[in-house]
Picture 1 (tube, rainbow, N blue to C red):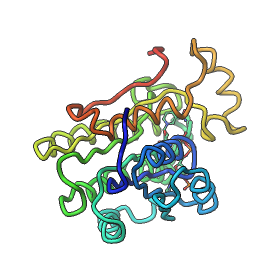
Picture 2: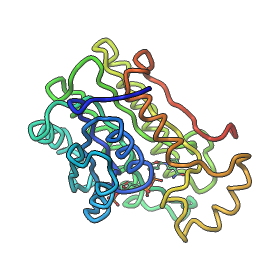
Picture 3: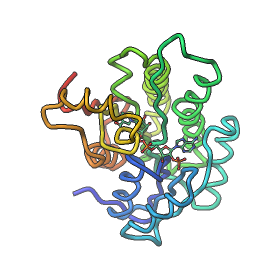
Length: 248
Ligand SMILES: NC(=O)c1ccc[n+]([C@@H]2O[C@H](COP(=O)([O-])OP(=O)(O)OC[C@H]3O[C@@H](n4cnc5c(N)ncnc54)[C@H](OP(=O)(O)O)[C@@H]3O)[C@@H](O)[C@H]2O)c1
């Protein structure tokens, strides 16, 4: 049985919704201290209201796309406020389907800020040895099955997620000798506000038939993230885990 203690402090980005909320709540339930980050204060507070140990759940309002260069300093400031981190689950992300002829540079740039540059630079801050606990630190980020499928209209989103997997594998190689682990998870369709919103309805109807067990649940991804953050996976690093009901 996986458990944590309150001296183990984890950053969870995207904690106001979907997969990030699920990871934040489960980590807290299993005993860890969580610093949940997102932009929407109301949704962060409603996540906190659901958690088992509210005294071990902290929320931070932050737009991760607004100052990428400043993210390592932001992590240092969080460390000074909460203590050294045992790891992070980077679950913030945005998705967008756009055929090539509709792509614009500012939109690609914004999506890459949230899906690629922010996880890269927040991880840079975390991997500064002054900000983490050293051996036993574990970092996980949510990529996407689209990094492998390369579907039509997905060049922007899929490339941000492939870049994330590659960068995390490189970083994992850099820190393995310090006993620090870095992994990614690539889910397929999971029931969250991202996939269940009205805008995604036509796509959803078309995609749901693919899965013999239906769409995935948030817990399907959250359980894997918790395993990768925990000591139970202490010899696992530099991996990407596909969670797609065996479809690919
Ligand atoms: N759901 C799926 O089927 C699926 C499949 C594969 C991969 N994924 C990936 O899994 C991750 C989580 O997706 P989800 O389905 O849980 O999505 P979601 O419910 O829409 O949640 C996205 C989260 O990201 C946060 N976020 C977005 N932009 C941000 C910004 N600029 N600064 C700070 N936080 C920001 C949002 O918080 P605020 O709005 O409060 O800032 C929210 O908490 C994403 O990376 C997504 O690409 C999802």
